[in-house]
Amino acid sequence: SDYHVPGCRRGSGHVVLMCAAQPAPDDIVDQLLQAVAELDAVRIEWDTLSNSHISDTVALQLQARMSAACEFWEECEFGNPASTFMVPQHSCSNALVVAHSNATRAIIQAELARLRWLLRCWESVARDEQASASQPSIPGTL
Image 1: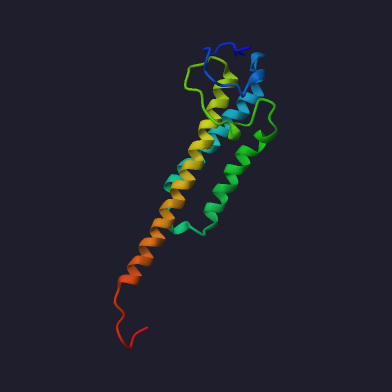
Image 2: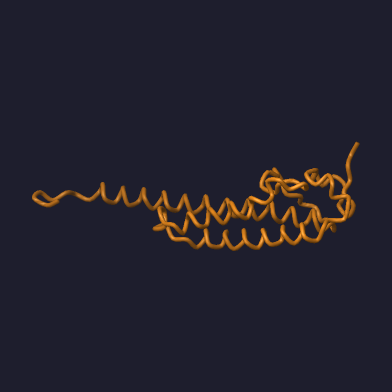
């Protein structure tokens, strides 16, 4: 009853790629690798985006790039890396399983970078509001 993907250690817990027993088409692996590269680039941009871009088009563009990188996988016959709930921690020699795991990891890391940026923005807004509220008002000035 336990399904085993050739080239992977038993008990890896990765059941998303049930059909990975067949050799992976190189184009699928290449597309996964391209998505990983794009998501890594987006993650780096989220990590370096300043807090002042909270309503900027840069943030909207990054979000659109993340969505575009993940869009293809919604109908993927090998499973959507964005809906995978875990990334296997065991080594595997199956190129498709490795690429799929890397895509899942890249999606999670890009989303975490986006959330860290949002947190930085909200912290900045809160600091600004606190600083303006703590300054005493001078009579006769606006």
